[in-house]
Amino acid sequence: GFFKIVAKKESFTNQGFTKQYTSARLNSKFAFTYGRVDARAKLPTGAGTWPAIWMLGKNINEPGGFFSSQFGTTNWPATGEIDIMEHWGNNPNVIHGSIHTTSSFGSTINSKTINVSQVSSTFHIYSIIWDEEKIQFLVDDVPFYSYNPTIKNASTWPFDKPQYLLLNIAMGGVGGAIDPAFTESSMEIDYVRVYQKGVIS
Image 1 (cartoon, one colour):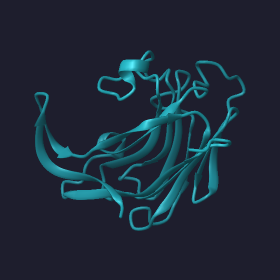
Image 2 (tube, rainbow, N blue to C red):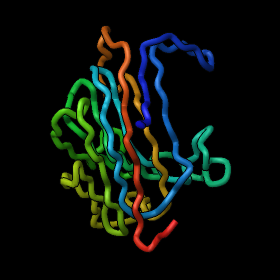
Image 3 (spheres, rainbow, N blue to C red):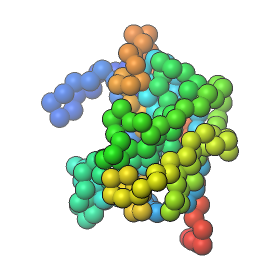
Image 4 (cartoon, rainbow, N blue to C red):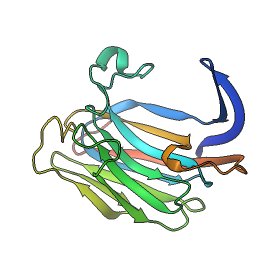
């Protein structure tokens, strides 16, 4: 079957805050350096949805993070962030691939988009190929962005250390104003695969 992350309109109180929507974020317990990631997914629909397939440095200092107690020595964005796929519900069928580092974060300049048909009704494969020199972004094996800074240092290239995968749907934010009629929508994941040269598990 498929793994589904579901965003729902429902009231939920946690840590003293009441929110009007619920969803989930899956943090993997596997970290790696270099390789290819393929994630075959169908995205949620509706203004305000903000699904993402992304990566963070294993060394991130994040409360509750799986690796934080042992490896959490570095704050974001110095850990590096690789956004394999982001989709903003108020701009349907436009897929973003982005990089965040201390040299470029927030309103990052290290980002490109590609138009992809029927992302919410059809499965597509969202990928990166990451090596010592660059990170290439692809959809359905079609490259649309390559991050390859001329000068590689801690500010521009924290991507020489292990990263781990995350899957989630956020609501609002850059996803746009949430449609008042929104009730529920899912991101369906068929698979996430990591390939590494010379690594047999």
